[in-house]
Length: 349
Image (cartoon, rainbow, N blue to C red):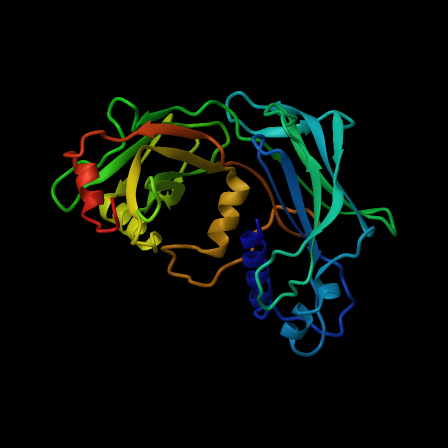
C-alpha cells in the first residue's frame, strides 16, 4: 500500500507541472484517498492525505508533514455496506436502498515505517477498522470521508468485492511443479479459472528452502535447520471478463536466476522442501487501471497520467485478493530436471 501511495503522489506532482494554473487562485482542498478491500484480510486500512500548492519549491512543501497530512480529529472516515443491484447479463452493479446496512467507522492511527524520500516520513496517518470475516461479496461498499469542522463529505467512492472460487488447474499435485519444453526454453504453465469482477491476475510462486547448519565442534554434532522462502512473481494477465480460464507461463531461467540472486549466504549446506506455494493475486478494474496509469508498459506515450475513481478527490478505492494459495508438490527424484537444475546453481542444493 505504501508503494501505491508514493507512486500516485509522484505522478500527481510531476503531472501538475503540465497544467496551467495561477498560484494566486483561490485555494481548493483536494483529498487524496487510498483503500483496498480484501475479504481475506483481518484489517482494512484507509490512507487519507491532501494535495498542496504554494509558491516556491514544491519539494520544500513535500518535506513538511502539515502540507500532506490532515491532523488527528480533522476527519471521519467510514466504509458503508449497501445492498446491490447486479445486472445478470452485463454484470453491471449499482448501490440500492435509502441507507446502508451497516457502517464500519475507522479509527485514527499513525505509522512511522515509511521509506525516506522527498515526502515527509516522520509520521503517516492511517485509518483502520477490523473487517475479518465481515465483508460480503453480494454487497456494495461505499467509502466516505467527512471533514469534521464543516460536516462536509469531501470524498466518496464505491466498489464491490471479487467473488467466486478459483481453481488452479495446472500445475497440480499429479503433474507436479516442474518445467517442460525444449532444452534452454523450458517453462511452467499456470492455468486457472476466472473469478467475478477480477480484471487482472498475477500468479506468484513461493519457493521454500531450508538451511542445514552443522556444528561439527559439538559432541554430539549439532544441526540447526532454518526455514526460508523466496517469492517469484509471474507475468500479469489481464482479464476480458468473459473467458472462463486464463493462462500464463513462468520461464525456468528467470525462476532459477531469481533464486540464485536471492540466496546470499552460500556457506551453509542447503536442501529444498518438496513443495512450493502458488498464490493467484487478483484485483478489480479500478486498481488495474491505477497501476497501468503509473506504468503504461508498451505505450508509445511514456508520460504517466493520473487515474482516480474518488469523487471529490484523487486516489483509488478498489478490491483485491492476495491470499488464495495452493501447495503444490515438486518432483521427488534427485534425477528430475527440477532438482538437477537447482543443484547446478551452485548455492548448496
